[in-house]
Image 1 (tube, rainbow, N blue to C red):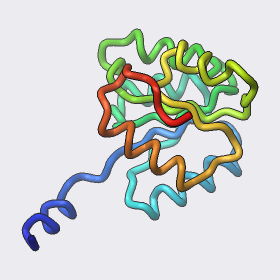
Image 2 (image 1 turned 45 degrees about the horizontal axis):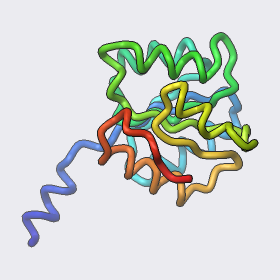
Image 3 (image 1 turned 90 degrees about the horizontal axis):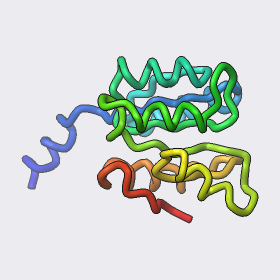
Length: 142
């Protein structure tokens, strides 16, 4: 039993790419995620998010859908179309909570959907699920 615990601690931290242009949100989320043991890298617009995903190879991408340069919808489509990034799970973070918006994010290539304001404990569950599920299976938490 102690060996199993030791092995868990020796596993590398999961790397998350947070693509968010609002400072209050990325500051709040990145600090809380780091306290939970995640390695968090930040991008502040959609183009930078796509480039960071290609260079950093995160375990999960948290992608705001309303971004400058290119929006999250376009970024998600580009990421899922790229061989090197297609398998990375994407969780859409969006203030769009109207009927049909969840389906729209899944159609753009996101693997899950999280409406803002962020429910941190629910987001942690979604991140955990995304890391265990093969990318592209969709579904996620309603």
